[in-house]
Length: 140
Image (cartoon, rainbow, N blue to C red):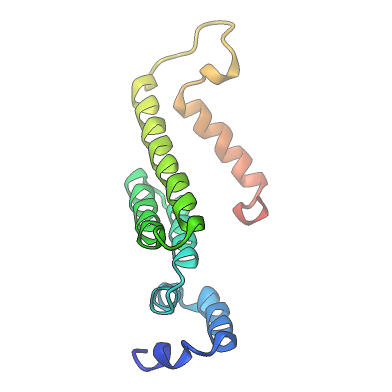
């Protein structure tokens, strides 16, 4: 692998085909490809995708933090990366707020006549799981 990636650096078609293969068969190698071929936007997008597929809050936060590092590393030379870094920071803050709201409302029942937004986190999870079974994540 250490010889393959540098050899592909000047070959964009080879990189593209190898990325397609890795996406299907070897996702860990895809990360290495994006890192070694200096493709921070692709590497960060992969980290974000993995973060939102992660089963725990900590894993989601860690994945987004990795994506943020990729964007920040290239932010000085790329306005796109700078904007994506700000958006990723916002995603991290929103996940943190979501977690705090779930903790704060745990076990509370919404008052009678309350709008649907007042459901506790368990009700939201049930509704979300029903929706998830209807729609595949790739369809969104």
